[in-house]
Image (cartoon, rainbow, N blue to C red; front, side):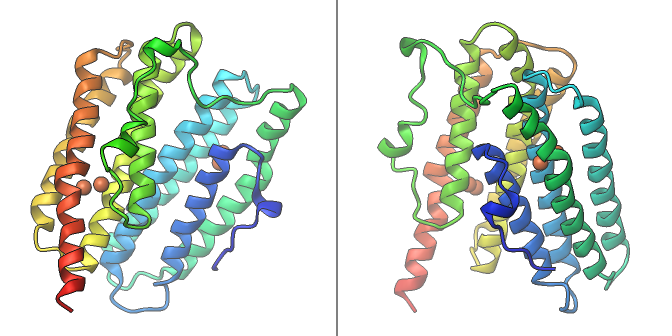
Length: 287
Ligand SMILES: [Fe+2]
Ligand SMILES: [Fe+2]
Ligand SMILES: [Fe+2]
Ligand SMILES: [Fe+2]
């Protein structure tokens, strides 16, 4: 089932969450585009893995908001999220185990679940926020002198590659890094809630982004894809290591971690992702 996003049908009025719901629907539409084709096992695995990463990213964001603003049904909501993630994993195993595993029922299930969940469960917390007059803040307010310029670097360092989709994702990554930096200077309960959350978000979002980028590169025959994938994997392993530490109660964001995340990401876009852009330019010139 192909789904067209319509604000009037699906919007909760919380911009970051709406954007995430829209992306979830985009990914299920990608699965829809291959359901009737043969030999799509590899592609289906890639899409389901990407869906898993993005769903995890979205659920982490949503649960943190609910926790911060004291949503009373948080635990039930978390349980529902968990069972959906379990279901994606199950389907992923199914697709992995069997060639030509039917994809249409999976896709129908995913779409139905996501829409029902947004219009049923997610609407409930959005209504709760409205009732209480809560306008969820998604940035961390800190004093001007402590504010980092990571986001400004977006413009100044020419991080933009002019590749649709990839640029937006890089911007989101940079935004997560900005939040990581700002959080270090925040105090109070937001800091305690969000430190483990932000590392988890970075972990899942980079998985989602790398998967998308690698697919883009593969489709265009980028010759250095293998080496590029090794770099991505190295970063994921490192962030997984941090995420484990935060999961075990480590609650400070050290300069060392922030500098590593920032330097790696910006350096990677400027040097490695740019190679792909140059390749695309060469390719179009030699056509
Ligand atoms: Fe949601
Ligand atoms: Fe939800
Ligand atoms: Fe990238
Ligand atoms: Fe990359």
